[in-house]
Picture 1 (cartoon, rainbow, N blue to C red):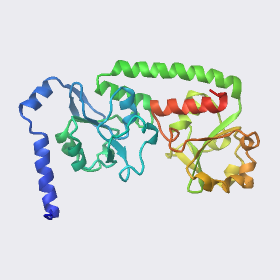
Picture 2 (picture 1 turned 180 degrees about the vertical axis):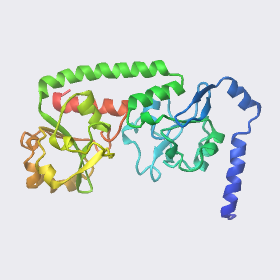
Picture 3 (picture 1 turned 90 degrees about the vertical axis):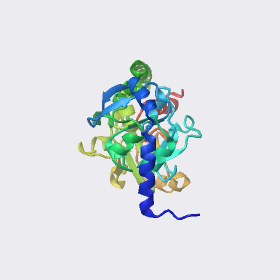
Picture 4 (picture 1 turned 90 degrees about the horizontal axis):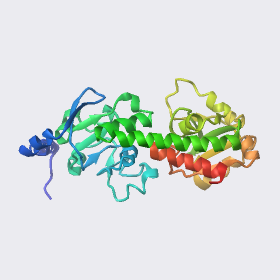
Length: 313
């Protein structure tokens, strides 16, 4: 096998980029049926009509919600970490590294790239991706707002009506479950804990499953959640042993990533002082499930978990 020296990889990539954007009349025909949108980074993007090969790393949730399947899916270390809760919908979809290496993007042969932010283009400069396929960067206000992300992806794909209808359906479902929970839970306090590598973390109230519990379903947060600093940026915040011992949650949803090794931790005195433990209302949920994520698909799964454990549905 011939050795490819480091400087040659740059030449090969340049050739590939030139080939990717050098389709002559085909590009001209595509531009005639494209809509021009200004993305969240201020780029004017010619979005093709009815794209068929989309790369949208970490936006697979809104993409699937709108009936589109990406050609690759976001991952870390070749799939050692990925969005497991979408696994059934993304069966056989190959992984792409979260930094979007240009060579991998070229190999995927996309006709549209959508990314959550400019930092997602870690394998090169924006113009290099845009030479491969029109590249759209979402607005910053979509970062922790799945509804805003769904609406913007819907606009890019010409599926605004479907996005709006999905949100309306979600709100109706939330209203129904919230009403049922109020009669069962009342003012009892709730927390979602994540146990990983022997450390407990508690979800912030405005992201991931915290948004579902305390915003959508309007459940009462346990004391440790109220103590999370307002300027905390982490979605899950470490919970000290002292704070765990004082946790006043009547219901706990436990994302147990430590499996059987957690048994010793759960027999400690600090754990047994929690009301939810005394009332046998600690519910283990799938550590590979939706509780660590934001999105329509994620939140619907989380709501179903809550209803199943508390309401028996």
